[in-house]
Image (cartoon, rainbow, N blue to C red; front, side):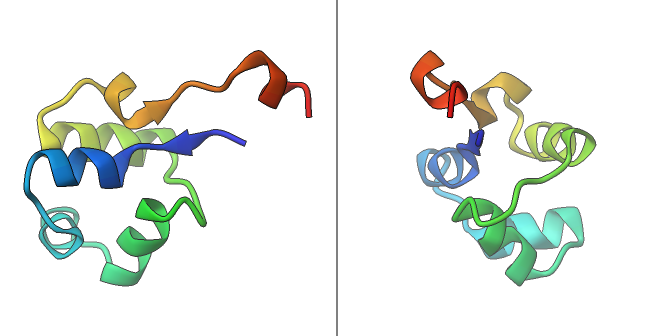
Length: 71
């Protein structure tokens, strides 16, 4: 399963999940679940996150190794 790097980028930018939840008008619980990779945002949501964080969407996606994708 693909994982996102939302939490990593937030830390790099010294931002909080609360800040992101306010910007996206989403619950802190949803942002927390995205940051912990318990659930994944949709691609449109991921693009919105990238826009808010001013990063390329690819920055938010952790590459999957061929070994993992074979599972």
